[in-house]
Image (cartoon, rainbow, N blue to C red; front, side):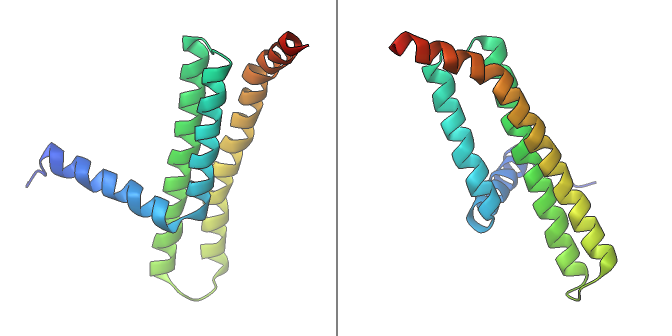
Length: 124
């Protein structure tokens, strides 16, 4: 078996991220939100455990969006016609991103809400 050198496979993966960012509106939105969340994390001085949870949540949502995009593009290659089976595959794939996003939002509320309230109280 012909193995691809690590640097080459890393280059291919980075190229995939760049291309996904260029063509997918949802990934742009998610990266923008992630940057805001990371900035707020810094301002609110989150501890190491909280930062790890935030980073894992961000990685989960963006990773699932990349997988969802891959599945949708693959289904588009398979058939350009509207098909109930292809729609079902795309819907299920998209639901994984939705589910991760909802739970990430809940995690965000658990971590950020008390800190935001405390931060607001210090301004009064």
